[in-house]
Length: 59
Length: 265
Image: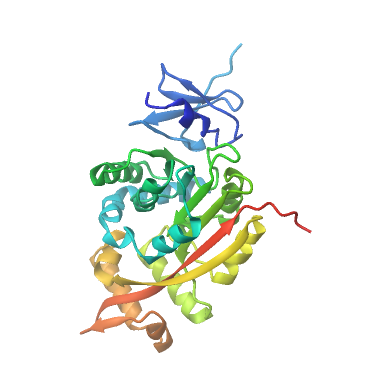
């Protein structure tokens, strides 16, 4: 995944504006607070709420 | 932005992306030169270019700044912009994000400079986008240049403009007058420092076809121009030959504003 630390620092969840975390296995950027996973397509993060995958509730 | 309309915008620009990237009318120009003069970019600047389209604005500023994040609602457009910037070469500091101007995926104060050129007329909620611009710009140093087509003050000319743009491009929402822009930008807690107006002449055929207009719809739009009142012809400097519109000239407004965070009274 071609996402450097500096660039990750200037990305946030478009919904809650909190930091997001990379999920290298799934090529996604995850907002745990909103339970949303944003895909990365051709190295471009798709930071659209409607395009995000909803994470299933855990526990 | 409502989901259905957003999909319409993405569909429209996925279809027409190539034409926007290749259009020489978007690269360079006196509006960008003026924006450069006003924004005074430095190699410390972190720039966000909103609704980057073909990437012309991002590429223009990239050599002057530390980095540019180019965002657009349409993946196809971003890929074309990425291709264009890598072909043009010379810069390695532009990255791409698919993002909605009205729900920006960036933390508060992440950028020192913001540009948004010939795009806000596609936004369904400009005040909301402006609040987002304000949020992501850093306090005291944050500044932005917005450039968009100017809505004429005369209501009849403005009606013609809105109607013809919507005939050409179903994703055109609304252009605004200079007064409206100043109000909206000020309401978003920016300080408007300066405005400038530029004329831009469009070759009618390429301009209409760039938005994907086909034969019949092109003919209808041509007729709409021909039948327009004289004052519309005068304002837009419509040039015709043998019943065909050859060119027209509209005006682009540049708004230069800063984030000073003065307390509202």
